[in-house]
Image 1 (spheres, rainbow, N blue to C red):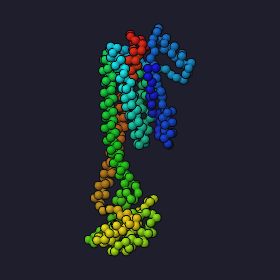
Image 2 (cartoon, rainbow, N blue to C red):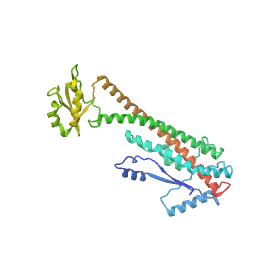
Image 3 (spheres, rainbow, N blue to C red):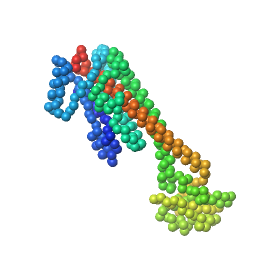
Image 4 (cartoon, helix red, strand yellow):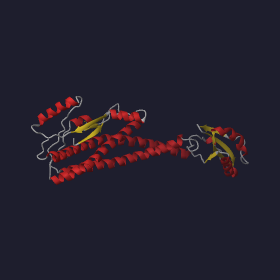
Length: 344
């Protein structure tokens, strides 16, 4: 067995399950393992094929066999084959890794967007169908080209796809991170969240002499706040504190006072365990933030759809390159194992 690999493919049941262990078990159930086996021909390929089928059916009756059609490639010198064989294992890991990286990106994008696209395809057919009916693409990889040239072309192509994936994924993740940061500000605790959507123009008094501050009060300290805020400093407007919002940890209150005592009030409030949030109501700022949020949401949707479609297409292209790479690898190792002329 020159080499083997697990070709993981998606089905409509391959979806996110509750809990990490369940997801891993589901992926394992949805994984099909393929071996590419090269055997020396002693009499004829047909008799060897029949002999192999008969032998396998006795040992593992539910294991299907398929012909993996490898063309007669250009052999070159023994030294070149030996040098190539040393590089093939490392290069195979790279090409396979990019294939699975794209597939994982597809899984993530489909989960986040709620898309249920079904099984992935390669060259317009399901992955398994392409694998089990593999045909060498002579137009893309001429068989008269040196093996090293074919391998280098595959490696260069896959490396370019990986670089493209990194750039596209980075653009998408950047917008997603910006949205997450905004959402955290809008949904976090009152100690850190954006207050602009909680405060109305009528809640704020701002004049030549008066100013309204916003106090974040622990829920268990609300009685303490209401009984003490008027006495923290002089020139606090009596009964000016009004509760605007409450979450699981804190309550948001207003308090109005003269400008000249605002800084001293903040110090006294902190000493009592109350947090004064810096806030300035601006209709223009609110509208600007709303437009920014809407633009980021549109950008995220557009980038996600674009990246997903690109991944669908690129997965098939990289998978095709990977299978041609596997064909080169089994050809090279078979020549080194069984000798010339190629008869396996």
